[in-house]
Image (tube, rainbow, N blue to C red; front, top):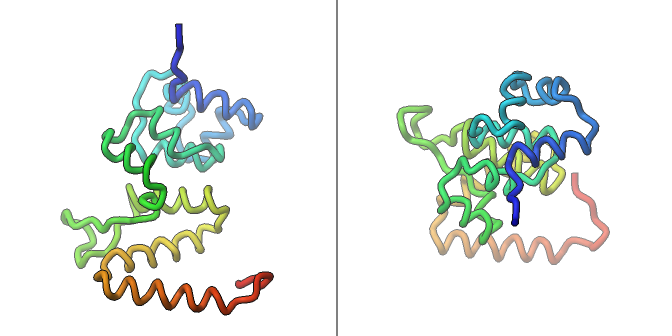
Length: 166
């Protein structure tokens, strides 16, 4: 008989491995102790934003945690699993918030920022900046994108191997 690890089991085991109490996790995520307890006991299904907060606080595998939580449609999870670059794209929200095509600071954008911070060990500010650049890139037409890619490749080729940029 094969038993499937649940989101709650994964969080519990990760938290214990990090030697973190439930109260400490509550402080780190700004979620209530009771809510986290219910998550670990598989009594509730978390929202994607909650999964992101917990993954960030525990330095967990965000993609795996989202899959275990079963809080996103299968189509989104499939795209995340097969195309890692898709996680770097932040889509603007247009449904009555912010207007003007500005990206939302909730939902997808916070998940993307968290993923950038975790996977590439970036600071919050750097992850936000890269997220904003990606938001701009998705609106370029093919010709503009190809020209920009050539420019970046040329610039990268001119840099010494041991150069570190601030």
